[in-house]
Structures are given as structure tokens and as C-alpha cells.
Image 1: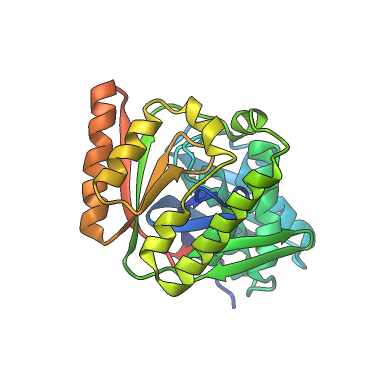
Image 2: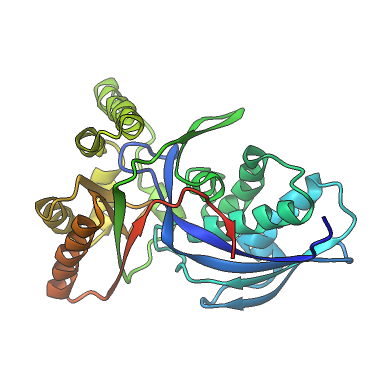
Length: 308
């Protein structure tokens, strides 16, 4: 292959999905960044253009640059890459802003070199971008961004990513109140130990959610969207959270929870119309409180990062 440039769509993602802290994630189809990556003869990564958000262009201070460097260290390639980023996902939104840039960079570089690395290897490189963004190299956003659909990180050492099918009628509604919660800050407030009783409840729900996705059992998916560990603590940081969740369920959502580390709130619905009704009900809560918001209704993105 002698293609020297590619433009890619890098999807937003919902991580944790209530019960699956740091192990479950899903890729969205209607919201994401766009990136152009091109080969250059000079070694290293250069970020030449960054639009949409006020973020650093210095390679070592940008998640795409850091993930790209990790890729280059492992690649058998004498040149480097130039990156242009059109950032459409706001940092601190809870829908995988840093993961989209990290995953998009390594996927495109791999493509331009003829795909020498597997998707699991690409996840490892992209995790270095996450380490820069949140102090922790977690994979629950970058894995679905690269694989598409739902993913389960069965193990971090060694890294083992399992793809999970998405039922065809499953839609995601996301409301993003215009406040920023840094992942690194929201991790600091979490407890580091849980009781056995809480653990049993939680892994029952993880198993139920995975089974529900495989069986296309929408009610089981809904029953399993319970989080006994993270949501009770993190939801305090999100204004109107309990009310948004309540009205989403009343509007027909299967279940609802915090997207990533927040402040975005997600809801799963069966069918596009229900997802739109859920969006309308969520909007009313923030209209009443007087907080600006963005809202997205999306089907599941089964491809992950893809050429534009």
C-alpha cells in the first residue's frame, strides 16, 4: 500500500455502562471527532492543526501525540506522521474525548502502514493517551472506539478484549450538561474497597448485561443497568442526576446511568422513537434547572474508527 494520507471518523464512547467500571464500553455512531493523518519522512509525531477545542498541539501534551509515539516506538517504520484534529467531542464530557483522539491516531497510522498491529495491540498504544488524560491507562473507552460495538476488557494483564454483539434495536440517548468533570478528579473520590455483598450484586449485573446483549433481551439489559459502587458517589457531582434518570425511565428507557466519569448521562432504549422521547424528557430537567446542555441520540457504531 502506498497511500500516504487518510481521514477518519473517531467515535465517542460510553464507558462503564453502569455496572462495568473500567471494563465495559460501547461506541456511538452519531458523535465523534474527525482526524487526518499523513505519513512524513521526518521521524516523530507532529500535530499541525487542531480545531474545535482549545487543546495543546505539543506532541507530549496531546493524547493523540502520546498514543502515536507509543505506536511509533513499536512500529518498524523510519518516518513519522502529521496529525490534524477536528475536535467535536468536548474534553471532560464523559463520552470518551481523549479516547477518540488516541484511538483515531493509532488506527490511522496502522492503516497507512498496512495494518501490522492487531486491534488489541492498538488498544495498548491508545491507552497511553488515556494515561496522559486521566493518570490511569484504562481501556474501557479506547477498546470500543477501536473494535466498535460493545467491548469487555476481561483482563488488563495480559490485555484481553472481548467483543459483544449489540441488539439491532438498541439506541443510546446522551445528555451532556455543560459543566466539566475531569476524569482524574472523579477517580479520586472513589472508594478503593467494597464489601463482598456489594461485589456479588455488581458482578451479577455485569453477567446479566453481557447475557442480555447476546440474547437480545432488552428487559434483561435494562434490569442489569445497576451500579452499586461508582454511581452513588459520582452522581453527587452531576446536577439533576436523579431527576434525569427518573424521567428517562418514565419515558420508556430500559435503563440509565453516568456516561464514563460524567457529567454526561446515558440511557438505553429499544427503538429510535423511544430514544427521542427519552431525549425530550431529559431536556426538560435541565431547562427547569437552567443548565445549558448538548443532547445526542445514536445507534450503536459497530465499526469503531472508520475512514471518512
